[in-house]
Length: 246
Image (cartoon, rainbow, N blue to C red; front, top):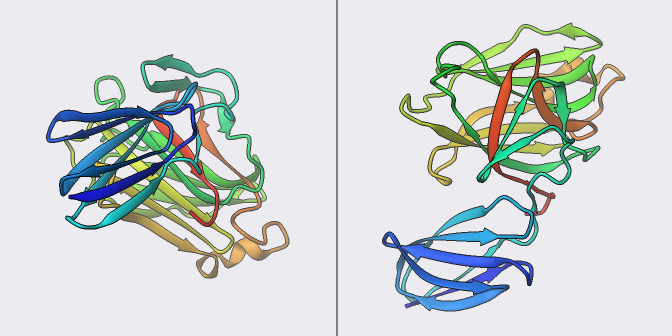
């Protein structure tokens, strides 16, 4: 047997699943004994999108997971999102920004890939921004079916996009994205199973000397958000922001 400790807010409902069946349901912080194996823990916080964590336990060990430190859900996003189950959809609006100035730490979310009306391989369609200071200064990231793109926008001038092949499986209906924002580095990662994160791009301040020219001193001075020009859309779930020190 192993011991699993789950830290959550007192009003949070917890569901633990293993071997395709529900093992236990509880409310608030939980400590329990489980057989060794892999389990999925789902936290249902009031007004929040479900937060899901996968944990592997070995016999005799004690493992703790913290689902308390994240800002979950859509409370700090501007109005204009529609909800369908646990998915939140937004169409158009240009720069749609998370209301957290000077954002740093880790941003995680799941993005649905709309092949039926917006083919994943049909060109860049998933766009997010980091260190958004204004509409003339930000870092733009984009992703299509084969490639990841990074573009610096400085005083309204765009640097040539950096293009990187990402190897996300063609059959994936969604992708989990993790963006780690530090003063001198922005790292983007992807996963299709909530674990086994793979690096999309590791972008350091030393590779972007143009950003030092008086306008930006670090990558965590601005805001995070999505870029939805025209009728572009995004559909996300499980949005969380973890402050530095996670």
